[in-house]
Image (cartoon, rainbow, N blue to C red; front, side, top):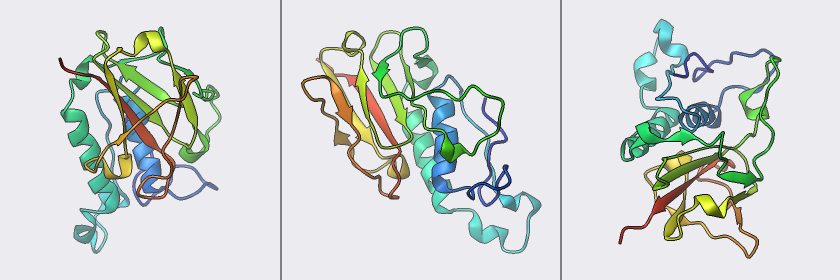
Length: 189
């Protein structure tokens, strides 16, 4: 369970950029695609300063609620991080392995999880890039779609690959940021 990351309106690391909606999405989606059953989050309103009631439905709260609802529509408890048999074989980036603290927005590692039967896979891409998937791990009759994590209830976009199997991100999301979810589902029938 991921807990006590950056809170909305606060920043855990001095001399770094302020916490943004993208920061909060990254924390949640990295956790969910890395084997966590969820995450705890909060805001600087934990001390109930004047006006806290007016900040109960910020854009970040709405985005994270939509991400939670999306996750609840899947058998999320079956998702296994793709560590031993990687689904993403190119364009993943380098995982941060140092104990040195960095800002969330300075990390750009791609995480992914899939069900053992391959009927569902979710890849979180925190920045604009092109990735390649292991074709042996993508069902032949799979649907690949982009989900905008800044508007997880919005329309999905088909994901297509070129002749090399490269899949580019479709461009900035509705917040103008580079993060996207690639959702792979096995077609019925």
